[in-house]
Image (cartoon, rainbow, N blue to C red; front, side):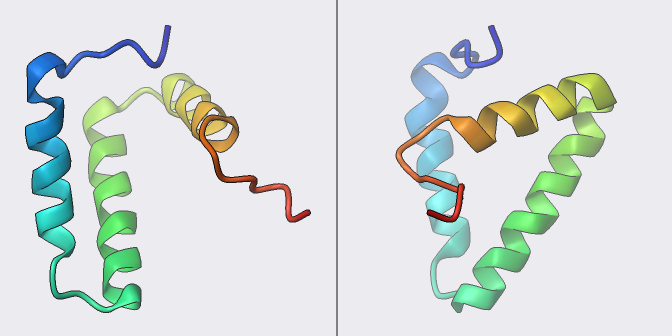
Length: 69
């Protein structure tokens, strides 16, 4: 499954580091940081089929409705 927990007990530490990386940024800077991070992580994964699967999962998982309704 795509959403298997691979960070384990380090998940909170990563979340905190991610939030810290956004500290003091404007919304535009924060969005740009997220875009750069996505591209860097995609390059690390390096598998287009997996990336497309992850994009589809990210689009449908979570409390936010991206359908525009």
